[in-house]
Length: 69
Length: 258
Image (cartoon, rainbow over all chains, first blue to last red; front, side, top):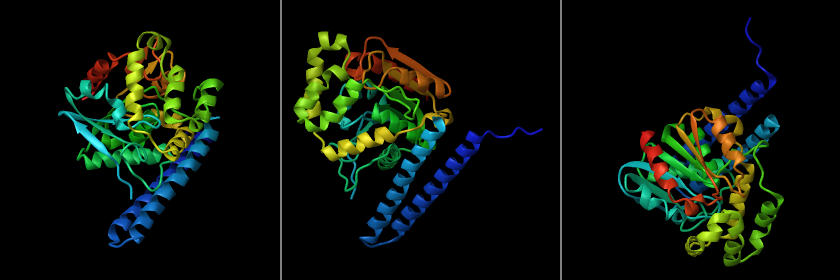
């Protein structure tokens, strides 16, 4: 019989999935920024990519904190 | 616009050095001459510190790890050994997790994994770091001595401590950058993911470290597969000053990790 995953393993998988999506979203914004030849749009896209990564990093840290508690 | 100042010394396999809270790449001045005899040593100033400039500060170790990866890009390095000290060690963990293909091996010095299971410093140490921002750079450097150095070093190597402080004061940092790095350290949490680190790892820690208690090194060594733990007896947080012999041990580890 297949083993049932524990709830913390499921939550961890969800958190990992979210992190994966955020990294792709952030990379996509950076790729878009590289394709934009003029300022300030390029800087704005790069700043948005940084912000996406950093806000998610705080959320992920908090979620993993709760999971470890 | 963000611009990160980096320097490269020596030839051989590359090793990227990541410094701790508020320190510039120049803080590795004792270690670089030893490592660069056989390795290409890349140091850099974290965002907002030393000669690096940034409109926005880094408030997470994830962001700081991405900065470190961009230094490798600028240096034309595909894969490197990584030596992170204190906050830099937290960044090194993130680098090994976020950019694993770039990391050949890791040295984690006087650092921690973060999260609720991290071993916290004493209330006295926490209180010092809270009031540190109200002190001048000179006063803060002097006041931090009992926290940064072990008792033997303070008793016998006052000259080394004075030299450290003199060099640290050459690169003062904006308070905002310091606060951002404090936030990054507080938010850092790699505990659960340490077992995913595949790179050979050496954990180095002073037994008398008051800033990051030595229990954190034991957690890192336990959680990271195949990690090697080296505890430096009687050494405090800034163990490179107290135990310069550790640099040779780091070189040996990096050579074996090729």
